[in-house]
Length: 178
Image (cartoon, rainbow, N blue to C red; front, side, top):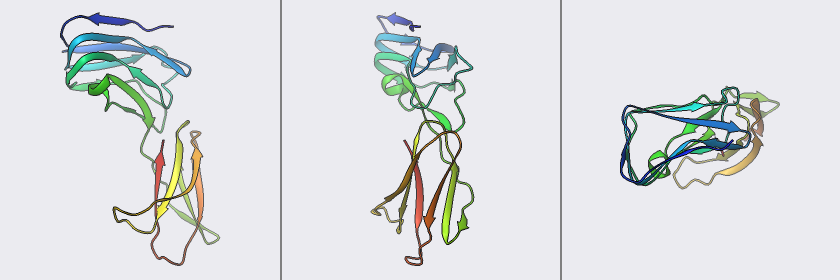
């Protein structure tokens, strides 16, 4: 299925409700879009509908909603389709290149526990992103973070078992999702 493009040769002002439909067709997603040869001024509410509600957009899916010589303004409200658990919409590029994308959400850590002198670090994953556990002994801005391990998310729990150190007395961990 291919998307559609509405083309405008002059300035376009969006106010009220703007509705754009997307279709998640496996790894290749398609959507309707607007092409504006001049300025696109965003305002009002942007509603994005998924024509395949049983197939939420997957991690890494990007939808180009607008293309314009210049994008100004901002939407007062964004109504976006649901994504799978552990994922969220990144809308930071709407005013830059007119696109939205599905990214990994913030990682929710579960309580740590000790196992045979090691620390078990657990958290929920989303299907698709790669999660990297890193550690450092300092929280200074110049601290060097070392990779402890990585896992590809499958929608279940990731568990890293890390030996507990006697020295240094402090060890800090962070999880990054790409």
